[in-house]
Image (cartoon, rainbow, N blue to C red):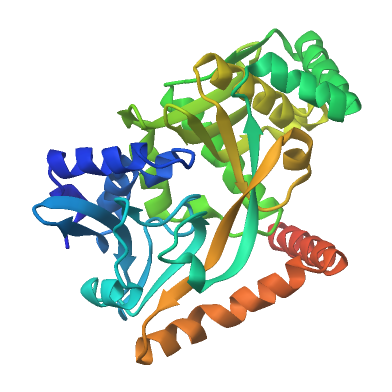
Length: 354
């Protein structure tokens, strides 16, 4: 049982080898660099290292709560979670949790195919993806066939933005810290405006994003993309990329330019730039949204739930998380109720601001 910073380079390289050998998209959230960054801002981050003989054969990055409740590393912000195991390695789940000194292992974006934890999933969710494996032109042709009005309108808005606000340009990997600060300010305002919990009000998330913005590893690199009009940022996105996957994480735009749909334009340019970089998949994450429906080419499954072992800790986990999760699931499954809940959140947000 190690802190992330205690992993040696040999162990990290073995971790990378095991991920490279899988047939699932290589999400940057499942790489040792992401766990290391979380470890710098979350003191209770740990990695369980499993051995087969003298060789590391598995890794389980996790966080241990004060009461012994475990959770996936970076739970709440990580869009891909689970164990990294060599073929044929299948520890008994309860024994693994006991070895980690946790009574439970909670997850909300468990990677599909995680046989160790999928049996404990309470819900399956769709994560929305853009496939640009065959190039951006092929993706655009898919949009022209499936949603011709959407693509035509979005491109027209991009041209109109250029005429009225100045020449439009896109930077796929912007290194200006001021642009990142602007993005976080936009995103915080969006969270408050829609009545959602402001993630950037949590210091550890701000620090985590700052560390990942400086991370430059082949399979986990912080990537800030910015859409400019006359050198003024109008939309931006910060995410993580591996050699084959761009994990879309924090997109936002300047509300002053909302009429031009700069967020949609940004995503099209991100898809184009990602394809040019050899990236084949953009993962927009779970959670329904109109822009995801317009842009997606497909969906992949992720899971939410918790593995537990018998004892008081399991009961404590159930009491602390399960009622709220079930309430959210009940609302999500009823579109009219979900719409009412969204309007209520926005109304409450307006009252707080007034």
